[in-house]
Image: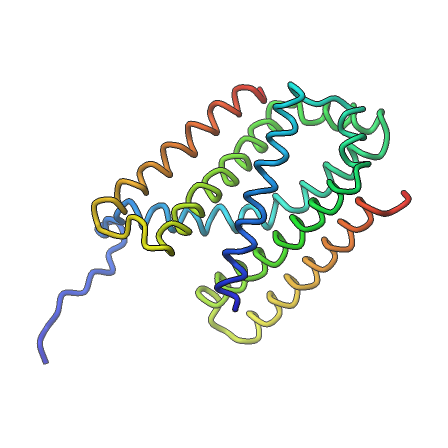
Length: 124
Length: 103
């Protein structure tokens, strides 16, 4: 049997850009399920409870640590959103060649980070 | 079927996201009374409910795929899947309480 090279040396495996977008899609999705959904429901339920509860929630989200956490969640949502649109386009055979697929994965990373910075700055 | 639901639910969530952004931007931000008015609107309640159903189903498919890939022992995977399903149904109940509950 022919000897084939086996590369399981993780630091030596260079994940291509679409692969990075893919694993981040998964990681951001997991992050959103574990933290995003309960926090969303908690925040909306408190905010609708009373004017005092609304103000109290606003105040608790003004803590720098809370803001950083919210911005991390915001990035997760935006990345998952942008990467998701890219997958929907790939599904309808838009940009499936190697070069456009690489380019669109770079666009996803840049756009989601840029939107996070813009919206995050406004949130701060 | 799941393949299709994963994509349809994504489109529902994307549309809802754009809707909420448009409402907030249109009003130049939103304060407490605007927020209360928004959630008092029957159409917005229904849209929010559809968003949450799409989100929870989408989350189930995603979590199940992740668990199938990384958790090999069937017993532990079944346990984690069960915990996930219970949590997602609880979130659905919470959603109903928020949107149509009296409290």
